[in-house]
Image (cartoon, rainbow, N blue to C red; front, side, top):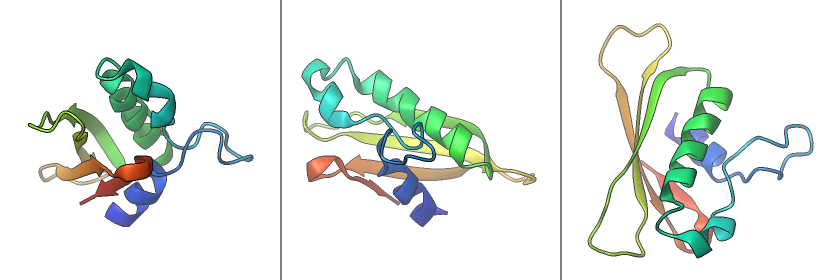
Length: 103
């Protein structure tokens, strides 16, 4: 699942001709409004997961502030469809070039 989330979150909207809304907004377009654009990116991650990762339900994306103002991290939580046990949790960190690492 983490590998699929990594691929999905490292796709930018407009990269796919067949599905132009696949992926998240390009952070390069948001960087000028940072840190106010964090909520835009947070919502983009959640919307993308709800639409393109049907195995997850009850998706939540939370910004994780760090001491480094240039470090951008999020916690993604959700529950697998059909699962009755507690939610899954993933963490992301924005890497140089706008790539998101997922673990």
